[in-house]
Length: 393
Image 1 (tube, one colour):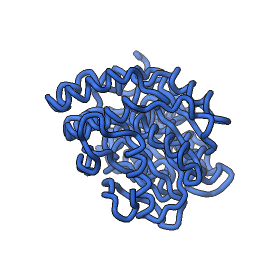
Image 2 (cartoon, rainbow, N blue to C red; image 1 turned 30 degrees about the vertical axis):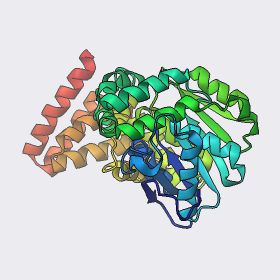
Image 3 (cartoon, one colour; image 1 turned 180 degrees about the vertical axis):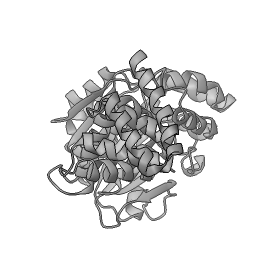
């Protein structure tokens, strides 16, 4: 295809215009929003380009012929190259999920001079029997993508994640997909088989698998990692097919490590983000942080990144005060402003930071003098509820 004439994939560009380019490819049935949880942080070090498959998100189905059996992964790769050419990206890093990963692997085999690094997330060298994909394509052409939603939820997500707002938004993308575009992508998956060509990939490669992924099981990822010279393999517990949505921080950390970001020894955003996330988990607990990260959307991603880098990566990590003292200060500030929901969270954090219930009571009593009795009264009620839950739990 002529890169100046080929129809462009719908895309979004984030990050400094002079930064190394990193393309992010989506999975079948999703839009570029599948990368929402990672895009903001990656864009601090890269010019991040996310794109939509034909018939998905903002890309019309007609950017490629949609006749049954006409579309291949090579066709999709040509569209990606046309997009890179239009953006002036002669060389670029590439990360893709499932079908998006297959596009990246094809590029790495057939256009190795363009790829600086490759990450294949929940992907495969061959996505199962071709006939199953042709049957799915025929079903979607006849009835649309609606009938696929229930079965897709069990492939994309673990049971505990399938009812979250993030899962709901991604499934809405599936329902909104153009049937002809979705079916054409199924045809591409049916014809895809790179098993004999994996040894030709020379780009530094990371393979990421979800241990609970029924669509591209870990064995598929191991085949990729074993076949690509020097490839690394990361298997994530608690993740099914859309690992970037279900385990967003783990995937982000892996991508930052693979494609390059300031190390923890640097005073850069990458180091602050990594340190901040570690301290945030230590103080607030994994369960709370996992819930917060899972709820991250395109609207809240920048704020979550800001809180992790600045509050947790800069302030809570400073050496001047220990965490016990910082907990005392935090409790007092939350009492003063009446932020009772946050107070409950930080009462639990204070216990992790070494305060006893008696210590917490002293902090609240002291707050009564300087913040007011009504504020302290509400604070005592909140703290008593949390401490009772901690004792009985």
